[in-house]
Image (cartoon, helix red, strand yellow):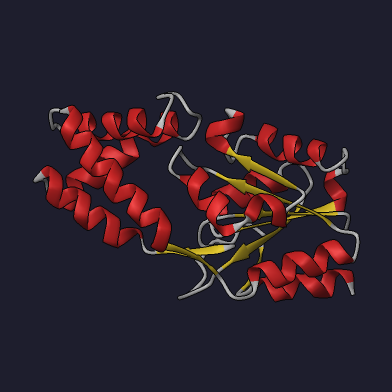
Length: 216
């Protein structure tokens, strides 16, 4: 193995998104289901940076929820989001030790996340830019999983590593499928609960320490 590509949310970091969505839904005066539908409707565009900024992302979500995106409202919501980035996302205990150990063994590492502008402050606060050899945030590179080009870009940034010399870890089967289609060895991480019934041939792990056996 020459390279390890790791997902961010629910792979490298645990999140408490429910706390933020509760606050935003309350501020908008809409049911959480309406807010979740708005997130889903805008996610494809947000994940490739189409709205241009965190404010643009939030405005799109508010409009999709059927609420007038008053500038004062948008600023309040952004304040909630900024507060959340400071405390609502934390690293799993095994994440950085495993990444450091992989790098010490000569394995190059990349973080790949489907995300919007609000993720950049989280990455910076957690020091992930320095922890990994490459960091690919979908809204910055204009590509998102499972598009094969984002995995190819990661391999390129790591020194044109061959796909069959890399592994990919994610908590979403669909995103593992995208990597596997290129010949990358895939691991579906299930931090809590049970693995889905259809694994599509992906190996299941419960923590990142399992990867170290691949380079022992």
